[in-house]
Length: 270
Image 1 (tube, rainbow, N blue to C red):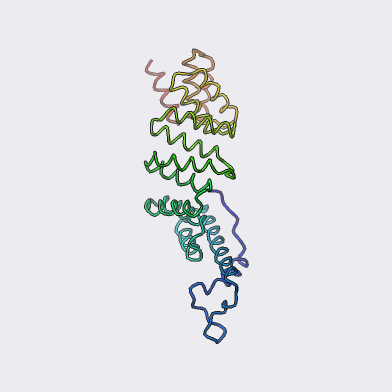
Image 2: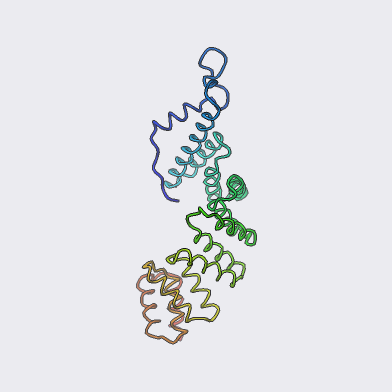
């Protein structure tokens, strides 16, 4: 998760000062009434939302530093201030997933969607969680909801996630469609380019697979799996020189990878 800047202590103090009577225990005017009694209700709501937002951002800062315990405490406090602050539910779901409390993680991912049912991000997040935890068929529906949001900035990501999940369900045709939809919306989505090349290669269409692995390679973000796939594609097409180029790159850039070791073992056994 991208690290967000830590907000100034002064701003946090102002917000918390305005929210100190959330539990109704404040009484500093000698009248037996809270000092916030004359503050408009909408102002109190705004203060609680601001407090929830700030604590959520503080939690993200702690998460970036690997401090999940303090992050969880901040998120729990955020939700005390505003139980309906959807971003806090999303972030606390991530923390619970990281500490392997999957029931709590799922509950908060679902709560985020319930609070923002038409927004792309929470639907994509829940879809990913469901896919990771084996609820593949259910996950696809949330990816579809994500891409239906006209204001969702990265529908290609949701399409790619859907495709990966469809591959886990052995739905190759559905995965191919999802990856193509992703590329149509973002022609430089590396994950979609790689996975589409992989799908086409598995289907026996090495010629079209080559086009997509070359587009992936042109992004300048090589990895062992992509170089191995490039080697396999060119080998199947009978292009020995091109295959050897991929092999040399794999062995020089990722010598300790599983893919490099596999090809070395294959070559030594021939």
